[in-house]
Amino acid sequence: MVEKGHSHGDNAKYYSLRAEAIQELLIEKGICSMDDILTMADQIDSRSPEDGAKVLAHAWVDSEYKARLLADAETALMELGYDLPETAPKLTVLENTDDVHNMAVCTLCSCYPRAIIGRPPAWYKGLAYRSRVVVDPRGVLKEFGTELDESIEVRVIDSSADFRYLILPKRPAGTEEMSEEELAKLITQESMIGVGLAVSPEQTKSI
Amino acid sequence: MAKFQPGDQVRIRVGVPPTHFRTPEYVQGKHGQIETSWGPFPNPEGLAYGGDGLPAQPLYLVKFAQTDLWKEYKGAAQDTLLLDIYENWLETI
Image (cartoon, rainbow over all chains, first blue to last red; front, side, top):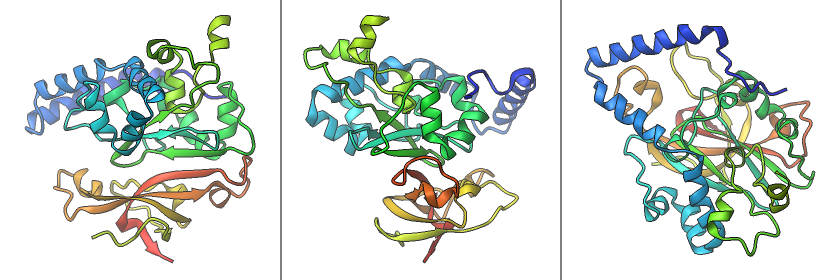
């Protein structure tokens, strides 16, 4: 079972003290200022899954925009008013199709496209998800309620270096008449990580 | 100048230095294929210690067959895993 809680549990206090000590050292050594740290934290907090959903829903309705987003995510994001900070890692968008299903992880730590969708869910940083998704991606998908056909290539993307990966989920069937705003509501945080699919219109009705 | 091109087969170097590195052990010694050549990036093995990360290392997105990574892989034969790896960890086959 994928552990949905925070992996550090009782150690939360230890980790928060450690973070504080590191912060103090960074400032003391002149590597960055308190302002830099607060600006960065504000930037991350100003983003949420809704921002990513808005961009990806636009890609669903505008195929030319989608092509630009897949080719150069950072420039395409600027078109919609999202300027990624210079300090943010490079961003790439990967498209899920009838043939390929991408799902993202960071096995080494917790790399995540924070600059566009904010902070990751706690389970994303947990050891259970990080260690299991690379070995048994279909098993993990099943636990999130998604079973994919054997004919689909399941592609795990382990973001270990300078790139962060945002997944463009497949547009569900039966959404042809929906507005961009309605479509954005179908794009969940889980679908942008690739552990789930976009919500179908039928599922919306049953909620 | 990037040494490898998309499509090239590579082997991931084996090594567990006591210092910072970003090549997970589960791909070490495995064969993969270059999917994308990203260009040069500062080497994190130097950046981690306050260095400038120079000389920059070409970075590649490398694709692996899941069945090559795990003997008892339970998914489908065509399933893959992609990972960014710096050139100093790649060997020509």
